Every structure is written in C-alpha cells, then in structure tokens.
Length: 92
Image (cartoon, rainbow, N blue to C red):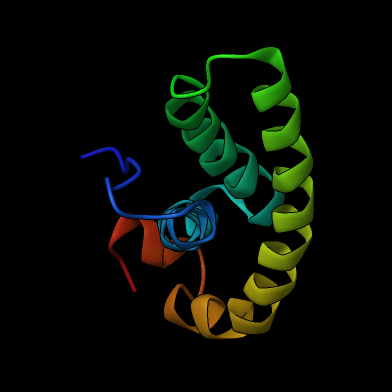
C-alpha cells in the first residue's frame, strides 16, 4: 500500500516515516524527492493563495536540511537491516 501523509502528521513526521520505507529501494536523495512530492501534493491542495504557497516552499527548504541531516544519522541502522541485493529479493 502506498505511503500517504496521515491527517495528524506534520511534514517532518511524514517525511521521516516515508523515507524509512522509500530509502532502502531508492536511496536517500531519490527517496526524499518521492516523499517530499507526496507531501507537497497533499499539502498544496490546502493552500489557497500564492503567498501561502511561497511561504510553504520556504519552510520546506528549511525542513529538508533538517530531515536529511537526521536521516543520515540513522542511515547505518537502515543499511544494516538491508545488507544487500539479497534482502530485496528475499534470498540470503
């Protein structure tokens, strides 16, 4: 089932949860882009004015830096859970 933002999640919570699902398959940068676009599609639909959209984008840039920094701290734990190509196919 595709991961989607929860009704009570903020951007940082959703992207952190989403990245834990997407990074093993797509890597950090592409995983972040996938998660961010999912958030933006959901979040932008709530904003009615161009000023709201611009303010939201500036906030997203600040959050991106924080999330990537946090994710890089836990990346070794994720990597150890998915030790190689065998983990993706189910073989050892």
